Each structure stands twice: as structure tokens, then as C-alpha cells.
Length: 273
Image (cartoon, rainbow, N blue to C red; front, side, top):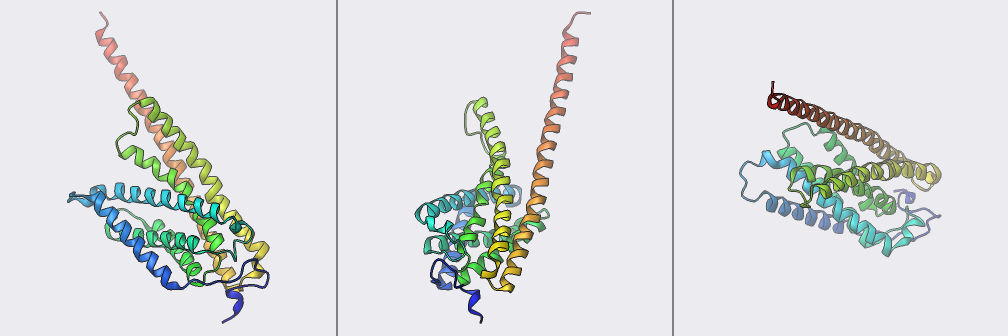
């Protein structure tokens, strides 16, 4: 097999492959971890399908928080990842990628088994991510750019938090503080969406354009397809996010107008004729 699949003469860091056995180990461990989390959240509830979306979103939120924290630690401990993301790798970052791969495999299975709605876009997204990360892990190549891509999970924290704060009891006792939290989440959601989701797609395509000769043509075509697909899915996700936001505002406005009409009617009845 052509050696340029694994390394290039211009690589800043030496090629040090990690055994795929570690990939399998971390994936199985992660799959088991989220299975246990799901069981703990489910508790004694017999009607799983009623609360499945709530639990699935909460597990996605947990994954996003853990993954984002690990990426931050990984970057702080190994800033060399910015020097040459293509050839840079270490066991910690490798484990982060395997952790997320295990989660996406778990979520893929969970959606197939329990979802009552159409989750086709989510399944396609998961297949793309699983395929890309598995390739990176198997060859221990492009680990740095894969870590860049996983930073999308920073946005996922805010994306899932929008639902979590609606479905679960308020964090603060004060309605004012809960309202400020919602505003913070909405602002953070849009900022991190642009910065991490579209920003990562831009960084990926730019890197492939500038450093495309450092990878095998087949691998380059494969990666371009993956990154472009992610960009297309991000456009769909942003459209749904904006649609949901405006629909929510419209609903709140209608409810407010309805409330005003009721108050006007009550006042009219109370006024003396």
C-alpha cells in the first residue's frame, strides 16, 4: 500500500501508529458507559418511548460536555497540535476520538431501536462521523484535524441545553435568573454554531486546498466528501434552528395576545354598566 497514506516527507511529527486494539477497547468501554447512563436515567419508567427523546438529548448533552472538556485539556497539554494537525498525534487525543466514536455508535443504535420520529438526517450524520473517525483511528493519521472537527461539540452543549432547560426543572429559583440563562444559551448557541460548525468546515476545506498534496488522492477525495457533507448538514441544522426560534417567538406572541384579550374581557365584565 502506498506509504503516503500514512505519512509524508513534510510531516513535522514522526509517524507513530497506535494499535487499532485500543480503538476497539475505548469504543466498547464508551458504548457500555452510555448504556449504563441510559439505564440510570430510565430508572423504573416502563413507558420508555414517552421520555426517550428527553433521555437521548440529555445523553447527547453529557457527551458534548465531556468531549469539550477533554478537547480543552488535550489542547492545553499538547499545543503542538496547532503546528501540524495532520501528523500530530498522542494517546490522549486518540482516546478522545475513540470516546466520541463509541458514543456515536451507541446513539445510532439507540435511535434505530427507540425513535418514533424520522431520524434519517441524524443517522446519516452519525454514519459520516463514525466512518471518518474510524478511518483516522485505524491509521492514526489526521488526528489533529479530527480533534478540530470534534470541537463542534462545544456548540452541541448549547444546542442540547435549549431543550434540557425546557424539559427539566428550572436550575434557579428566581424566574429572572432562569430567563437570563435562556438568553445566555441562545446567544452562545448562535455564536458557537457559526464559530465551530461553519468555522470547522472552512478550516477543513482550506487545509485540504493548501496541504492536499500531503495526503493520498483517494484519501483527499474521501475527506472532501466528508467535510462537504457535514457543511450541508450544518446548513439544514441551522435552518431548523432558526425555524424553531421564530416559531417559538410567534407562539409566545400569540399566547401574549390571547392573554391580553382575556384580561380585557375580564376587566369589561368587572366594570359597572
